[in-house]
Length: 249
Image 1: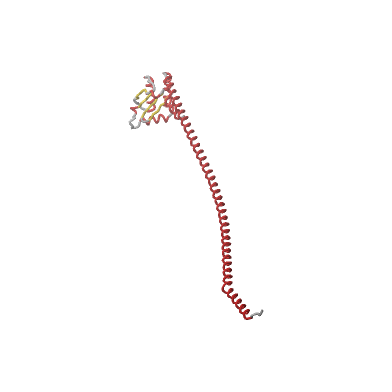
Image 2: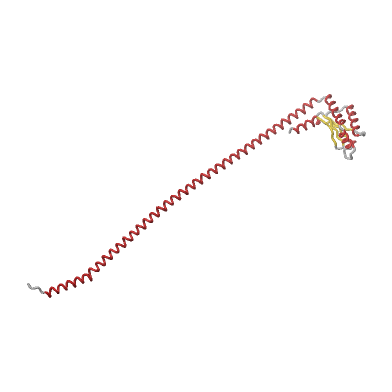
């Protein structure tokens, strides 16, 4: 069988042209499409990896912030608890101080009330004692006691020079209590002899004659009192008891 080299050459040429055409118009676009597809897949994988990396970073950041929030919350809660305990202790201390102050005021008020009651009781007791004493002296007054009181009064007139001088000066004053208004008051009625005795003693003190006025004053409670020119001299159980009562008040 004879080989037709022309035909073989034409077929080879056709094959080469076909290969070139396939490579040029079919294979190369397929390769380019495959490369583009691979590049797209690589890009998507890269983006996915980046997204996963970003997500991991976000997760770690969230976990860190969550831990920080928990730490700050715990610290804040601890501060609140500490502040609450401190305020509670302060309020308790203030309450104790207020209770102590109230107790002190109540004790002071109670002491003051007890002292006032004791003072009032003592005052009433003294008043009752002196009232009973006055009643007792008034009941015991008799002629012998009256004579003794008159004797004591005359001794007081005679005992001190300054008393006589003051009586004399009072008797010589120009006041409304002039010597013609010398008054002698007694808790009991004086006899005529007793009145004459007093006139003589007063005349000796005033160094002049005077008209004496006599009156009975039961309030003197066993005593005699002379009043002249604004000056008063006397002694009585009532004045003695009054002075004693004032000194014990």
